[in-house]
Amino acid sequence: MEEISSRKNQNVRFMRELFSSSERRRESGMFAVEGDHLCGETAELDYKIELFLFTEKARGKYPRTVEKACKKAEKSLVITEEISEYISDTKAPQGLFAAVEKRAAEIPENARKIVVLDGVQDPGNVGTIIRTAEALGIEGAVFTGKCADAFSPKTLRASMGSALRMPLGYADEQNLRDKLAGFSIFAAMLDESAKKLGEIDFPEKTAVVIGSEGSGVSPEIAALCDEKVYIPIKKAESLNAAAAAAIILWELSKN
Image (cartoon, rainbow, N blue to C red):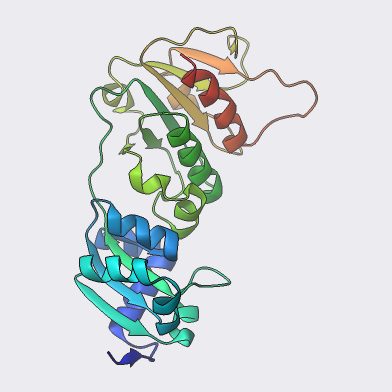
């Protein structure tokens, strides 16, 4: 198999665009992953791999992942180390890249615990929240407001693959209530009417809203919530979104 060495190659350009452009991901209905872990995950899960690019060095170092991905991919091509560095979104690329078709993974009808991300803009926070949610048995995540792209490279890396497995939904203030019909919705926010975490018995079907890093839960979404909950803090002024989510979801998981 001849190595691709040109940056102008259409497959190389397409893969690089998927990593760098949320608009390209949106219009193509695809996203890109790189590295042994995430390429291996997509090869094993129910995803369609349209394109798989790998270096000869990666083939020698990660033979099982390369074999699995090549079998599943519509097209597999060898690239040079230079092209690997050109495509990569990381400082030390492993030489494995997959262009993957997005799939519908709506929240299960029997779900009982949901996290809602309202305008969480940092992809590291979004990925960490999804990873924490999966670890604690939360059954889905709903995005509302201007959240970071769940399929951006940084989000996927921060989630360590959880974003590939976690059912994801999307809503706005007009249809969030319909999306979460039957759920009691708690907004994580400082408010005079908020209840102290640890003194709440969460209902069987509960959704917790985590707000944006700068301004918290938006007024529009807060108005849709049944209750507000706050984390008692002794000294620090506040917690970041991912840390706050971890604490609240831990309490929710105990119910």
